[in-house]
Image (cartoon, rainbow over all chains, first blue to last red; front, top):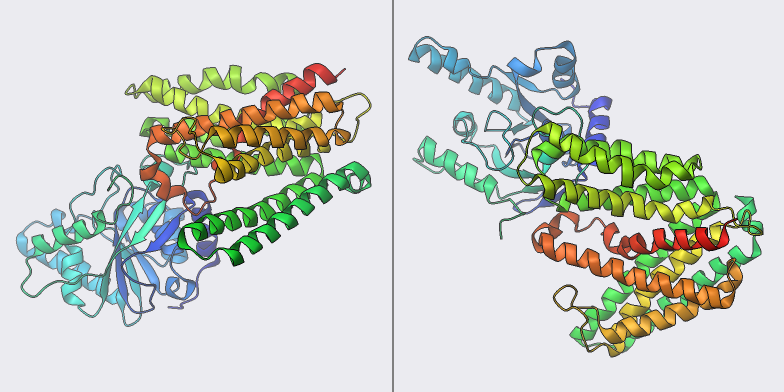
Length: 219
Length: 317
């Protein structure tokens, strides 16, 4: 797969930056070409594009989003935008819930992790929204376990938390037209799965890491 | 464009502004080399940052006015947009306001400037106070969320009034047809902006030099009676001295300048009170680095419509 950025992707990134007037702060780390998984809160369709547009272009070319297959594979336009324009990794949401027995669920889960690991390859980075769905923007929902399993599968990849602020007011769930308010994006300090750390405690810690980056109303 | 350059008095105005900018830059340089203590350093750095911003602002204004009516309309349209963007970001709105806000940004505000462009005074004057006034609460009500309904409707109304309606009266000066002053109306816009901004600047300078007694320390700790009186008197004097560029006599020019200064002060005070009310210390991070367009334009918001109507009432026809 080529590492060139699709011209439509650059255009959409510029539009998203313009609409969201986003102010980016690298609070816990610096932009780096090393392999990373950026994980953030999710409240708007703009989230991914804004986060992606905030990365320097050489990093952008190697950074792919994880998107829900059931939504983004539904119409030809969505498919084109996710697959061709942004080279998204489309994953079956709820594949584990649909499984008939625990074995099948385990298999489905493994399969998702392998797909993400394959997408990382040797030089790519990923953008992931561990809540799995868009929220109202008021608080962050519980994280799905994919982040934990992927982190164990690829311990060499850095996990970078990020907080997207005010985008729920710019383009909330269920709206098509944006309101051009201003927004903030903060990148935090990379974290790792500690030795013997349980799944739930890691996921809670990761969620806290994202929530702590909130700048408005956080004192 | 060439028309503007052929206008000798407009060139004089530009020259005067350029002269002021050069003098203030020199003063800033001299102050910087003289004062070495930390506390005076911050004040002087702040002053120099302001001077750099004035250069940029003046350059943008000069170019827009040179382009003519369309240039001024586009410039003020952008200023209105940026100001309203800051305002709506800071004001708490709810999910149910989304479509109303979309209409405000992309229909009501552009329509206001379009009406100036096609010189339809009658509609321009009532579109926001009459039509938008009815439209906004209706559209919020249709969205169905009644929590804090009146508050939300009022806050959006106020934002559109200040950022779109009031500010648009500055470029609307270009559609006034003053007998014996045809084709030279760009000077009126420049006059308004110069007196208004100089009043801001001079109040700040006088306040720094001799300011002691606070006017409303709870609202704006930087505003003092000494700064206010000194700033208004000196900016009024400056405006009076610019009478030759306007259709006014020196005495009329003094009255106009004085009105602009007082209203500029009122606008600044009201916007400060709004910021205190919203609790800008939390939300300030959002507009930090975006220049704070609203902060620069707050004095113009109140001065522009009153100046427009004074000129229209006394000098048109």
